[in-house]
Image 1 (cartoon, one colour):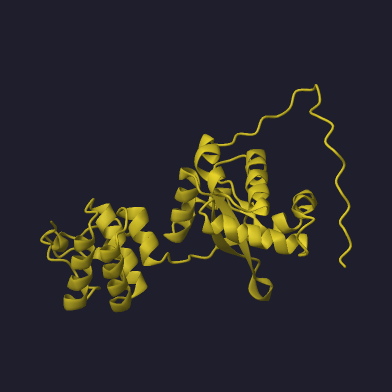
Image 2 (cartoon, helix red, strand yellow):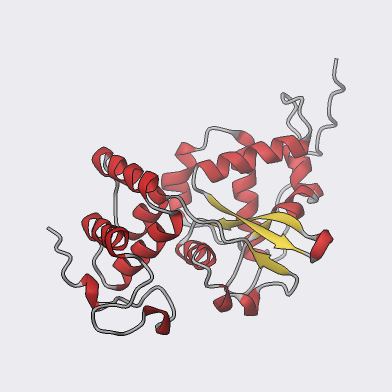
Length: 251
């Protein structure tokens, strides 16, 4: 029989002194809380709000290694009815929170040469968090370097095509999902991402427009000059939209 974990001392109440408030979004109580059906995930989520409130600056995130060394968090996750170690419970809670879209996970390379290691960082799924993750995944790291540790560089994980569609175009239907699968089977991932970025940059947020760009590249070649004679390579960034795409008709 496993040894019973020692019980935490009973709570004696809040003190009279002024306490620092912790900001928790109201949607946590109305939308997210009713969906959380796992105690460790709930504890981790609430604890994350406190940790993020303690941070300052524009880029706020949680390092997986910091969470794994946080004795207060691990102690709170040591459940009497769970025989797993607190760290194993934490890993499960992190996976649940990511799957529920409370957190967005990004992998980070730190160190240099043979000492390079991969860390897991977690952003709260807020507008600011999504913007930071989008910038990371699009390779726009220069915008974040001022607030990133000098020894850390973020791995650019290419988002899958469903994520690209939902983040840039709109809600997905089963018909659209099948069309996206066809694109994924037909074209290279970097073509697909660049086609999405061109569509967004040209304010043509429609799958037919993206399909038209990819078919044009397949037929005529991707790395060619546009009909205007301007070289796309001379316009850095995926926001540049050559005139050659203006004849793609969407309905």
